[in-house]
Image 1 (spheres, one colour):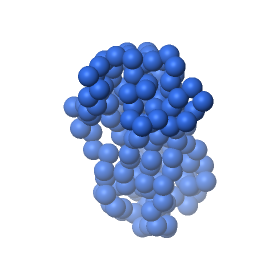
Image 2 (cartoon, helix red, strand yellow):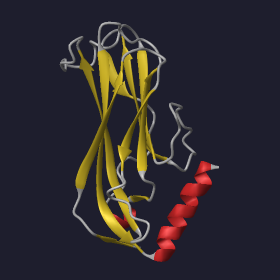
Image 3 (cartoon, rainbow, N blue to C red):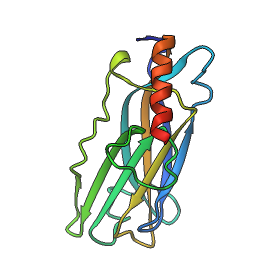
Image 4 (cartoon, helix red, strand yellow):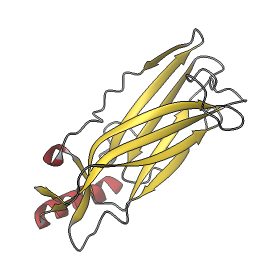
Length: 180
C-alpha cells in the first residue's frame, strides 16, 4: 500500500482555552508534506494530547487544577476536514483522534470513556491523510477559572509516504465523501 519516504517525525499544534463553553480551533499546515502529483501522503502513527494549565502570564503550572474552578470536562479532537469549532461525532470519517479529560472539585483528574484509537502503528496500519491541513479543536464544557488558561497540545507522530495510484484515489474519494 505505502512506502515510507521519511522516518517518523512529530508535528505539534497548541490551542489555548481561556473560558468555558468556548471551543477553539488550531490548524496544522501539511502543504509541505502532501503532494497530489507524486501521490505523497502523511501517515499518522499516533496522536497524543497534552493538557497544561497556564497562569495569567502564560507560565505552565503544576497539574491542571489552576485552570479549573469546579467540576469540568474538556474534549479535544483532531480531524482532516474543517469542522469549524464544532466537535464531531465518533462516526465521522474525518475524525483522526479524540480524547476527554475530566476534573472534579476534589482535584481528581481522569481520562474519559473516549477510547478512539489514537495509536495506529507503522506504515500500513497508519492513518493516511491526503488533505493539506489538519484541524485541532478543544473545548472545556464547564468549570474554567477566569484567572488561568489551559494549553491543549496535539503531538502528531507521522511520516511521509508514497501511495500507489489506486490507494491515493481511494483515500481521496473517502476524504471527499466525508466532506458531504
